[in-house]
Length: 135
Image 1: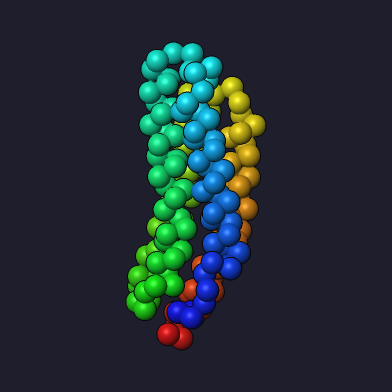
Image 2 (image 1 turned 120 degrees about the vertical axis):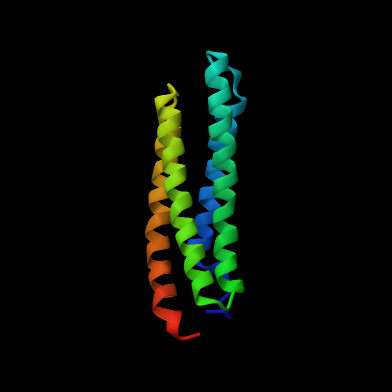
């Protein structure tokens, strides 16, 4: 597993797509003055948007960390971390929706991207667990 070029892995490519879409959605909801009818919502949406950008950017790094560590427990911790982050991103989608975001198509697009990433992630995680004793 240590010799794999993670840049070409489908899970890594999908993590970059998820990161990029998360950034675009977050920037739209945090900077568009038309989206913020009230100051209170603007503050909450900015907090959610910032968390979305931060968390989505952590996924590619965590995948890289799996290939840069020789520790089996470190690999599994990074995989668990990625799983938690994707759950967080889904929670941010729910938070934006509950805060009254009208542009639900952007949120649904992000949810679809998360589902796509998760399918690839589950296959990749199984391979990590299977190779756990091979290192």
